[in-house]
Image (cartoon, rainbow, N blue to C red; front, side, top):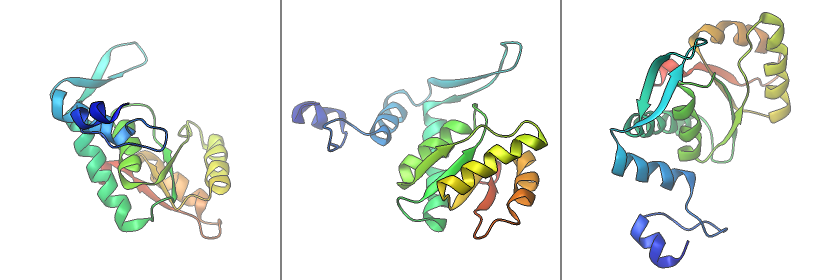
Length: 158
């Protein structure tokens, strides 16, 4: 992106010369705030919810504010959140806060919790964002982990 294009879009230059994901979302929220950004689809391909660009930006800012109070820039945060209306604000919230998002498929069965635990251990994450239904089982799985990350329901932030 040239300097003139950058000034027009309001983006910030990155070392690679392009706008950041944060710039991109802010621009979408500003210019297309009430347009649909994401649609949640159930197992039968029916729409069950949606988010506008403004809602994604607002949720991302809420997540970022929460993260800034609890972790440092550059820390890792595991996102054990299914694709859907909570994932986009969680991911962009990590970008806004300057932390490293480590997406992890949420466990579907109790045995699958071992995979999430492995990602947590291997990543050195400071925090785990997940859904309300998984806070308790993942929290129990983390009890024996030295310096295990806090397990937080994304719904309590949004």
